[in-house]
Length: 98
Image (cartoon, rainbow, N blue to C red; front, side, top):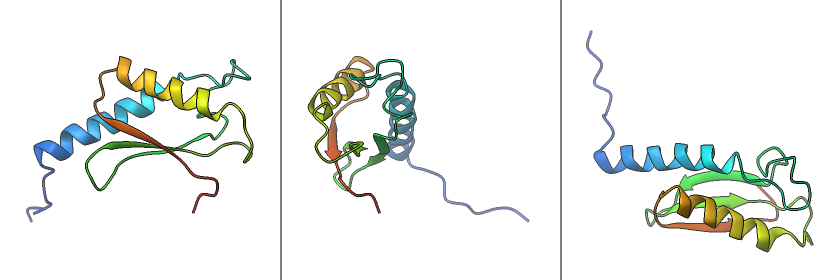
């Protein structure tokens, strides 16, 4: 019996590659206050996904609501994604994850 699974479009394949690439690149972004730990290890990096408008969206959650390092972390994320050539992106900070 042959599977009739839907094949991803070229655009979906490119976005999936960008998402995977972003996870890989962001794995190496250190926390500015504790540079021996990555933002992913601290749980600050919550998600990387394709937004409804097609843009690569990086979702972060601060370790606490008044975290003074979040603006620096957003800059570091933007630089990492730009340096990797992953395209247009936006960084969204959420205080409580669903």
